[in-house]
Amino acid sequence: MTTGTMPEARTGAPGGLRSALLRLVSNRAMRSLARAMAVGIGVMVVSFFLVRIIPGDPVQILLGDLATPELIAHYREMLGLNGTMLQQFATYVGRLLRGDLGTSVITGQRVSSVVARTMPISVWLIGVTIVMALVLALPLGVVAALYRRTRFGQLFRIVTSVLLATPVFFSGLLLLLFFAIRLGWAPVAGYTSRFPANLKYLWLPALTMCCVQVPILARVLQSSIADTMEQEFVETAVVRGLSWPVFTWRYLLRPSLAPTISLLGYVIGQLLGATVMVEIVFNIPGLGTALIVEGVLQRDYTLVQSIVLIFGLIVVGVSYVADTVSAWLDPRTRTQ
Amino acid sequence: MAFLRTLNSEARWGLGLLALILFLGIIVPLLSPYGSVDFIATPLSPPSLAHPFGTDQLGRDVFTRTFEATRLDILLALAGVSAPLLVGTLLGGLFGTTRASVLSTLWMMLIDAINAFPFIVLVIAIVAAVGTGVQGLLIALAATNWARYAKIARARALTLREADFIHAAYILGYSPVRVLIRHVLPNVYSETLAYGLSDFVLVIITIAGMSFLGVGVHPPAPEWGAMMADGRLFLRGQPWLTVFPGLILSLTAIGVALLAQGVMSVVRGEE
Image (cartoon, rainbow over all chains, first blue to last red):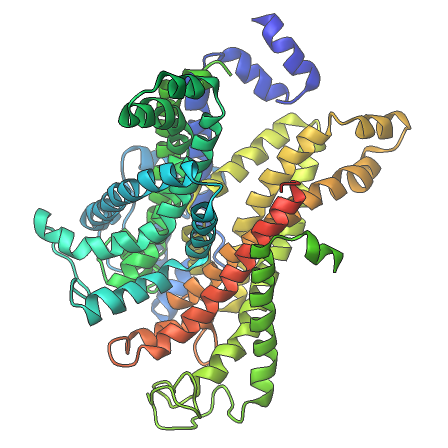
């Protein structure tokens, strides 16, 4: 063990504290868990400071002329602004660990009830998007890798860069204009929470998000398949004359999936950001709409703070799971 | 000109597109007979020769407004990229070179935490706290985006730390500050500058997106996202209010993206 960590300490790549931690948790799984928890704490710190960077006194801003000493004290308590900074942070984390996201300073509702109402809708939207994106990106990535030196490869590169640079709210409005208003294939706005019926409302927003997700996934898949194709075992498989489906799945796709899966944390971050825009464009009452309409526009600081925290924690959690799964899928990354 | 020849055809297309939009952005507001906030014709009239992009619900010329917006959007995006680029690279270079490990570990935690949030969501949250409008938007962009540059700069500085010319500089007895400024940072900047070009796409989309959500640039000022938010109410009958500003915004973003891709492949020495 000591011999393993010595060169690291000398080159100093991870500093003193970090290398001490590394020696403690030499296990890769433990290490990535510790890292995820550290980032999770950082995410809480950032969201904690969101209410504290408000210029002036947030309570005064909220109450205006209505301010009485009792009301001020009550609102300070609700925003968690009593005591020293460290005490405030301890209270904040303590509340979060008990699952208490706080109370809305505008409506007096529990923030957790707003989240419980809106989050399933956003999860549905993201779920449908992921399924749709995989269905479109997998074949596209394989074909783009196989034909990357042809006209098709060039076209693929140009079309993906164009789609990646198109703002999601613009492509959403264009799709809305074409499919919902001109063709009438989808409702213009609204949502129903019953299962098969909600797909009617979700397919167009999901397609909008695919305009960005499919190019990302297909490109990563293309380049990782292209790397796989350089490997000797692929040549061997070609020489053995395996059937096309067996060759594609076992020799091209499966070894190439790990980079795509380890990208899942990034993809989820992108998706969560895009949901905010897409929910507003399609009037879907999800978490993103709650963030903008009930939170930012109403100056509901606790609601904004909690929703942002949830977004951050989801990304941290998914990145951790994605790391673990891709390590399990591809044993080569485990020994690093 | 020599630089132009090193670019691939996609990058040249991108540059051409960008030059055209910038040219129109300068020339149209100068030559247009209409002011960008003046009532000049029947509201909501469709595109015609006099008004190539039609008029909006207040009878303003959409063509003039769209190209007037070019200046504001591009300047905002430049500010939104350059401040975080400078600060982030400096901080990242510092944390990559310093041996004060406890401090740099804590900073890395902060950087990772900021990067963990979906970019636009954190920008929205900071704007909600510090206030909407141009000022709030720029503060929010700077406060979130520096972390991305710091991450890239730190990674680059860490690999540079082992480079022979850095060792040589130390052996020559140069002070750590001089090594950082004269030898580490110039090399780090070349990396973050290349990233900055593709980051420009993200930033300009975010700026327009924030205005589209109603938490960025405030309406009468011509801005692509704000114009699209206004036009959205008339999408069914008067789609030109939304489509034209959106199109010019997308073309700008696409132009920069194509250029960025070309520059990246030149920097990496491909093809």
